[in-house]
Length: 119
Image (cartoon, rainbow, N blue to C red; front, side, top):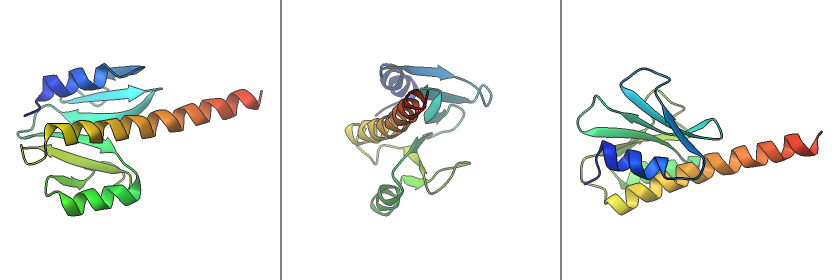
């Protein structure tokens, strides 16, 4: 089962990913292009992560998995909280992380391209 360190390693290996503690020492935040794609609560058991998600897929995941909840302290339309309790396969959780990273990275890249074209 994934743990805080394996999730951290997986997130930080992504191209352009950074990590930090902007909300205090209990929440590790991963960003790409200065935008959050994963938040991990380090003081909770079981471990929980928040991931950005397409709004329609977010609802489907909540219906399919008991361990996928509306994003805690986040826009519940765009973010899910995933409880790392062994009920979702590690491979599937990594896929959720990939979706979040790709969604945030693609949006940031489009935004940068628009700014550059406008100059």
